[in-house]
Length: 407
Image (cartoon, rainbow, N blue to C red; front, side, top):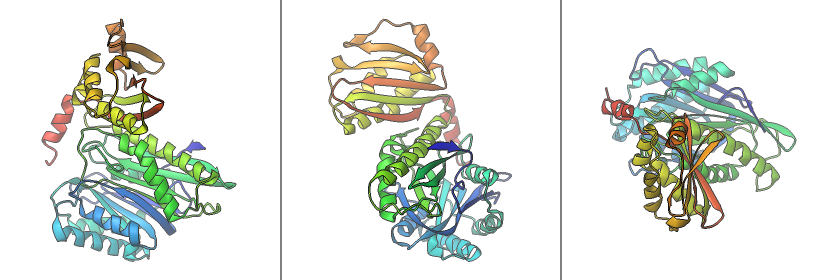
């Protein structure tokens, strides 16, 4: 497997586009399209929030029951959440309009929205945007980047990646893009994520691969502890790589899952590090846990701790905040057996062990905590299970961004 240039349209048969539609803001790309020249099998995961946006309800139905999927239309600026029957009607009209322009059924079109909750979409602008997207769709890096930029809200940069691997003697490509900066605590996947591959794989195995992978990738991300109404992660597979169809676990399935893990981990880290107002990506690594479940719970608890996040922002080696987060996580462990470390790059310091603070340099700790990527390592000495979670520090700018988000 190797990383290649490009994004969500890197696989054979996929085209993408990003255009300005003026949905809420002017002079910025705010609508995106992903399109396959042939029908795809689809899999997806969606928000666990009881309040689900209209596009989530539409997409969940399409992924579960439509015979195939061939396109996804995305808008930013307005979430089409808490919009009642009108919101659902808008999803259908979007899908019908895109389907007519692309020559595919409405039931083969996914729709997704992100932005302010409670605002009805301006359907005239949305429809014109779809027309622009249908005309602009293309292969290549520029089109992929346009699409990745068009799904951003408070993100500071586009998030995309593509990889190649060999499955059954055939070169298979998997590309993806995502957005997410705030309201990130996805008990399913991410804010908005789109993956596209030319692998031949059954719908059942595609869903299995995605469902199992997100437990250690997107589900291990938290920026602010808020699970969005719009969280959507979908993957389309059009089979154009020509490999023998993956219908069961085995060597080919493992190779596909390896590529999926690489892509999803990269995108999850990108999303965590680009949290609203963030100055640092925080990675919490838990080793020596009694169970995989405990390892995940402990790592996620550290990442979700506002006090730990604030300490990293202040470059303050306050290990008590980390111990506190581990202690209220719900996982059982012996505090006197825990070892805590701070790490950045190749530099690592031991800050807590044998039930008390270690002898370390505050100057060294401050230098480590001042880096753009900070690792908090907790060895629980309770077993052999481990997990990794990602988040970001909590800065003044997070409050500034969210205090006037609607305006």
